[in-house]
Length: 131
Image (cartoon, rainbow, N blue to C red; front, side, top):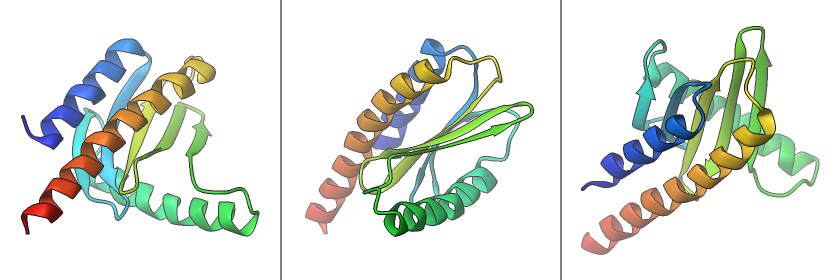
């Protein structure tokens, strides 16, 4: 099984644990889709926007001396968009209905982000060793 297939499995498990999620995706920090489980959004656009938001969030945490980036939460009229660090080279972005329990969202997405980070960083390490 490839890293992207394992990441997709983790995205699906996250959606199973949180039925109020309407989409999930993992992207590289520079905005390339690694895996997606989305229906109503264009994953490539969301990944690119996530990379842009990540850049701002990194600068903001740095300027305010809050340490390294961990997560970003945006609330809109129709729900939430949340982005979580996933290792050193990827992020997990989730879309959720407005009725989601945000505490549970953070708990479950942080766990998935950590697992996805292990998968993506491990795949990159193996790739570097093979070149």
